[in-house]
Amino acid sequence: MLPYQTLEEAALALGRNLTLAERLWYNYSAQKSDFLLYSHNALFMIVVFSLVPLPCAFMELSQSKRMAEFKIQPNIKISFSDMFNCYKHVMKMFAFVLCPLLFVSFPAIKWVGIHTSLPLPSLWEVLSQLLVYFLFEDYASYWFHRLLLHSQWGYDKIHYMHHEYRASFGFTALYTHWAEILIFGIPTFFGPVMVPCHMITLYLWTSLRLVEAIDAHNGDTAIASKPMKRASEEVAVNMVEILKDISSLKGFKRE
Ligand SMILES: [Zn+2]
Image (cartoon, rainbow, N blue to C red; front, side, top):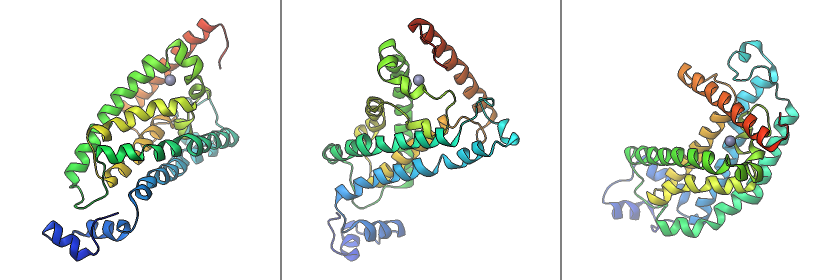
């Protein structure tokens, strides 16, 4: 909730007229509690997760030959029931893990200084904070994934679930064991904790982070450049090799 009763009072406190974006934010947020504004992150994540994978999902279901050339694993078909079951699992994760995690983290978010107040950050400030968050998250997630989740214990107890589908698609971005959601919450929130931001920047961060995860799992390279396609193919080949190694170590067959 903003500490100003009117727009004029806010302008007086800032010593200048409010920008259009600040007036819009004031009108939207002035009477809402910080907890309610923070809860919007859950809403944005659910909307992003439900909508962003759809274009690639429709392309997959249409079985178009033209689109098959962009797929990393063109011989593996994903059915509607595969997608729907995956989506249902992730919705349960939202309901029982992600949303409660967001809600209980509110006091910590307040404590570190993430705020809803005016003035709004400049575009430069938002972009530089997002860059720092992405760099840290990418680096930490890589090592969490490699050292913890692909260790024998981590894979058998937690990460096996994320690799259950033979070919990934957008909805598998969050198809994980509940513990994996908690583990990846650490690198995701470390950036905003270390470099506190405005709530609007946090909305952008949680949404863009999820878009990035969906893009990394969508199983095709329709919107990626050629170097990205090559890198994705290399990752896919490496993952198959890693899974083969783990399967032979455990003495079980995993498709
Ligand atoms: Zn993995």
